[in-house]
Each structure stands twice: as C-alpha cells, then as structure tokens.
Image (cartoon, rainbow over all chains, first blue to last red; front, side, top):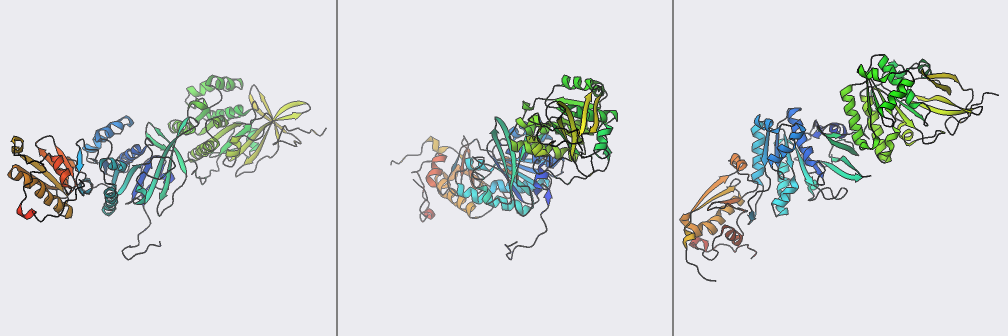
Length: 496
Length: 119
C-alpha cells in the first residue's frame, strides 16, 4: 500500500461476509467486504431495493446477522408488503428483534429550510439501533432520495461522508443504494462513488433483442480480487439469481469412474466409457442420429436405475416418446418409474438466463445423474452470440459442479457438417466430442461417427460406420479411408 | 409598512419542540436564533421543549427526525417544521406565521449581527 500515513495501522487481509444471494459470492469471490461500505447503483427498476432487501433477509435468516435497515424512499410498510410475495416474513424478524427498520422516507409535512443543518438525527438513530440489537449489517436504501428531501447538496455530501465514516467506526458492514440515470453513464447521479468508494456494484437492465437482460457488475472492490465482468441475473420467485456464466471455474474435480454410453461398441471407441463428470458434445447435421444417441444415453441411465433429465428444445414430448419407441426404448415407462423426466420447451419462451435458471431448478428438484440437452444449438437463436456463449459456459459449469454426465447435441447448419456456433463455443469446454456425419460410399450415403476428443483417455480415432435400426444404434467397422471427415461430405474410399 | 395591533390570534399559546444533536455550534445557534426571533415575539405565550437526539435516539426514531436542528411547531395546528439553525429569519417567521414587523427587540438583541436572509 502506498498510502502509509502515521495514523494508518497495518491491517490483516480483508475478510468477507457471505450475502446468501445466489451467485453473488461466486462473482465477488467471497461476498461483501466486512466492516466496509458497499455501494449498489442502478437505474430505476434495476433491482436495487430488492438486492438490499434480499441481503438483509438472508443475512438474518441464513447468516445469523442482525440488520438495521434505513429507508429513505419507500415507506416501511411498502417494503414489508413488497417482499411478502417472496415469502420473506419481515414482521416476524421485527418482532424477534433481529431487524430494525428506520423510517427516513419523505416527511408528509412540508419542511422549510432556514439555515444550516446536518444529518445527526438519522446518524444518531442508526448508531442507537445498531447497539440496540447488536447489528452487524446496516442497509440504506436509497441515498438519492435524500436529495429530494433536502435542498442543500453540499450539506448532504458532507453528511453522507460523515455517515459512512460513522458506520465504519462502528465496525458494521454496510450497503448503500443510489440511482443512476443512464446504463453506461456516470456511476451514480450525485457522485456517491467518490466518497463511498470501497466497493461498488452496478445493476443494469436493458432491452436487448426485445428481451429484458439484467446484469450485475462488481465495478470495484478496493483492495481485493473479484470478477470484473457483467453477469446476467434473473429475479425469480426466490429473489435474485445471479448466473455466474463467464466466471465458470474449470477446476472441477475430475472423476475416473467410467459409465456406459448405452452402446458397448461406443464405450469401446471411447476407451472404456464416459467419465461420470464429463460433458459430451454430439454434433452432426439433421437426421444423422443425434437424438438417437441422446436417447440411448438416457435409456442406459434408466436401465441402471439412475435418474436422467431430458431437455428437448427441438421436438415435442410425444415426438421424443415416439422416436424412442421406434428404437425400442419406452420413455413413458421410465417416466412412470420416476427415473426419467422430460421437459420440452420452445427456445423462444424465455431468454437464455431464464432457460438456464429453469434448467438449474429442474436439476435441483429432480437430482439426475445424467442430463441430455437436445439440442443446445436450438437455443442459439434466442440471444446474441455473446449471450449464447455465456449460457453454454454457465450450463457446463452447472453440470460439472453437480457431477452430472451430460450429453449436449448440436445441429450443424449444413447437411455436409461443418461447424455451428454451438460447436465453436462449446468445443473447448466439453470433455468429449462425437461427430456424426453422412459419408458417401459407392454412390450412397451412409452414416458415420468419430470421436474427435476424449479428455483424459485414449480413444479410437477412426471413422466408424453408424447404423440405425429398430433396436437402436449399432457401430460398424471403421471406414478404411475417409479423406474429408470434418470438412464437407466425406467420401469413403473402400480401397476399390 | 404599518404597525399592527395585537389581535386575538396573537393570544394563542405556542408549543415548540426543538430537536438538536448534542450541544455543538449548530444547536447553540438554533437555540439563540429561536430565542431572538420567536421567543422575543411570543414571550410567555411560548413553550419550548429541547430534545437532544444523541441522548434520546428513541424519541428521534419515533418522530422520524432525520436532520437537525429541527424546530417543530406542535401547537397551534397544523404542525409546522423548520429545518436548520434558523439563521434565515424571514423564512422562519413566514413559516411560523408570525408577524415580521412586530418584533419585540430585547436590549441584548440590539447588538445582533446582520441577518443572512436572502430577502
């Protein structure tokens, strides 16, 4: 530290406190900085008050930390009512003396200003309330409202700085919210970040491709590490849900347990089966057998008495069931036994953040050992390329954390194969990649399969014939020579 | 300007609460200005209660006192609130509905500094 002045004593590393807000600890690398002030800024409707309220609720109920909440904008009764629908019982917390709400909202009586003043009233109220319930966290929402209540901005700036100093002296962690007028303009309307400057979080909501996209960014977190990107979040029935997309960790524990594909020949090609915690990408043009591979993979789980979640974005439920039946797999029966859950949805029903959240919820409820997404590429059209990439990374990181063996299918745009957007964004993250291709041989099109990547294991690198019949898939002999398996329509040279 | 005679309205009893924080300069100025501007006019028809929010934070919470000094005219109704050290004399008087011209100048107020009023 360069600012060594006589009255600064060296302190230990910053300690963090968990917020309980889903995803926040992940993007902030540990939560709020203990004993410091964090500023949350956002335009109107960006979720500042909800963030503040969720923080106080979870701090009390999950982190066992009492809270003083100061409202400058909304009436306490409105705040209590607004979060009732989320199932947060603030009146009970007030009764149990875990929470004190200080009402500093606009006075209904007109107040004339006649001379110099300060904010000792509220500062003294806060100090007293903190002592009264031994609060560890003070939440103030929203500072900007002070500028509507009081006319002298010079006094307010000075007093807000004094308020922050007081909070720091008391040793409490605090969170302040403030408005901003533009999504990518000045950080906050009255320049709060200048004097409340330890940590700053920016909430944004924008209309993008006719869909609302909400993001959260940790703008600064003085003196400590954090992720700097914007992370999408959704506001769900249980409050905030930050999707730690770009921050996905690639350091998940690796498992050496092998599981079966559902086809002994494929297992053999993969060097002995799939790893339990792996993500497999199956890429191929339409009709090349992707859904069949997914079905085979899912049926294998059911046969072993393991749960599998199948997410369909291209075909309806009845279609998936009918397809499976044509290959001798009875999805209805597996579903009755509670081993299979099929969720079919049009990609356009919601944004990618919404889809990811929905997937997470299904996984949390059903607790499957395997996941099939058919197809991931159908979701490409919901958002722009960047959103899609974030979605894929988020999904991959989610299934890795849960150690679910997952099979994603991806449709190549052209019949001859080639890369899809999905392939480009997903291939580096997946553990195994299977390409399904049409192969021209003696004037006829056959199907072929090749494993082009199998992380952590040897694998068969040859192009095998891939045969589909009424009992499912069969792997044939390798084609002796396929000159252009990856690019264009491969032609098998039988040596004739 | 004309001199007005005390009428019936001026016989009303006034009750004030002055919220201050500690006994610092702001509090002292507010009290001095109150005495000079308000007390001097109303004399014995005026009752003032001073509340120190540092000593009585619970009262501050109950009455939602955010900024100080805050002068509250409790009676006669309606409640009137004036924020600040009352250095703006004309604003203070206007807000309280007191006659600006009927000032009773006490001898010790003769040496008072010039008001900071913008009017």
